[in-house]
Image 1: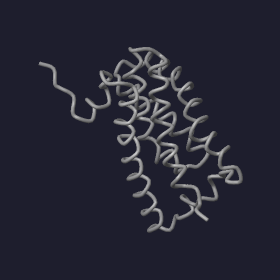
Image 2: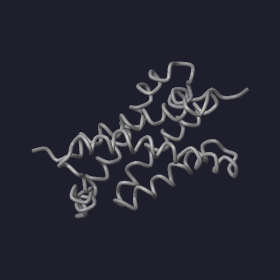
Image 3: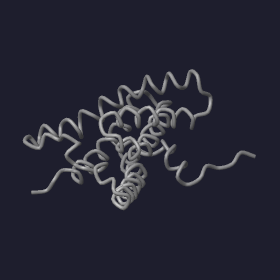
Image 4: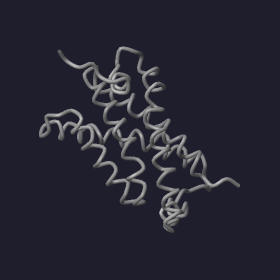
Length: 170
């Protein structure tokens, strides 16, 4: 008898609902744990004297043009990164049989790539890309564009919240 997936996995692989409902339902699964990871790392880095890991000056946001910044981070990055994620997942699927290894392998690649910009960023977003990759893999059988836009939608909501939290307030 095959085990039923846990509630988290069941939610993540449930493509029987509308794509929009799926995006709204899965977005917190990506974002809430990532906020917890980032908060925990920020607290520990502060306690251990490594505050510079979370210094906002290293993020290099162009806050002179909020609309351009929004377009870049909330629209452009999710669309581009999801388009690049598709061939990465396809490549991993060719060499790795276990679905969750494919998903975690993709998340690891994205964490490393984000770490090239800001090292701690990769650690913070690893989980987020586990969810993005799992969403893409769940929707891929329904069609590439379903997988693409569902994943980009979750990513856009995540980046919108992150942008709102990271932009220095006047």
